[in-house]
Amino acid sequence: MTLLRPKYVTFDCYGTLTNFQMAEAARDLYRNQLDEARMAEFIRNFAAYRLDEVLGDWKSYAEVVHNSIERTCKRNGIKFNEEDARMVYERVPTWGPHADVPAGLAKVAKEIPLVILSNAMNSQIMSNVEKLGAPFHAVYTAEQAQAYKPRLQAFEYMFDMLGCGPEDVVHCSSSFRYDLMSANDIGIKNKVWVNRRHEPANPYYGYVEIADISGLPGVFGL
Image (tube, rainbow, N blue to C red; front, side):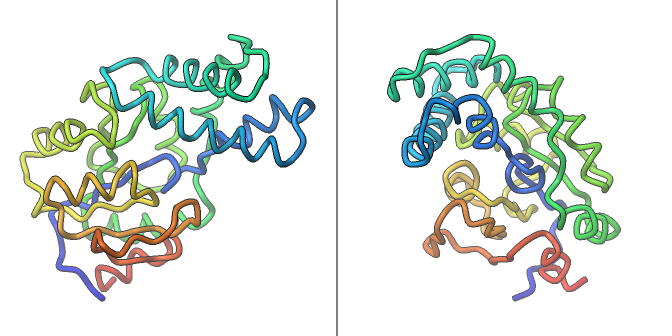
């Protein structure tokens, strides 16, 4: 399936483009305290609490990480250390792209402007973006929007800044819960799901599925 050429291709960054390594950070911190079954449960809880933390009023991402680790430790009977939360937060700008990202992005960027809408702080995101290997027309953060995805306010901020509407973009993400469900709710008809196997398929939301970003140029007939 080939989509019409949009004004912009908009992207989630962490997980979709940048290799999101919160699970690896948790393993580094707590592997000596948890067996594999308990470690897997800790990682599931950590992901759930991160989502819960971004759904309310605006707070810094350092607070999101701190609170979600603290809550996960409490649930799993682990002593919480503030230094652990700080270490995880400070790792974020060091993360690089998935191996498939630079070549696929660069090919699309020659024809269609690329935009990022990320659950990030301004001080974090450009370090990650610089590693992606393609030029971006714009990079918008949760800090600028004063809202994290999946809140619609984040998408509304992006549309206001771009001066366009949902009909003008194709939104690309590996996450339904953070991106594609909200994209659907706000009226983005053209969506691409990058199946990085951290969420199950959900055909109700209407999308083109690709295995990784190397498949993205083909979506636009490039």
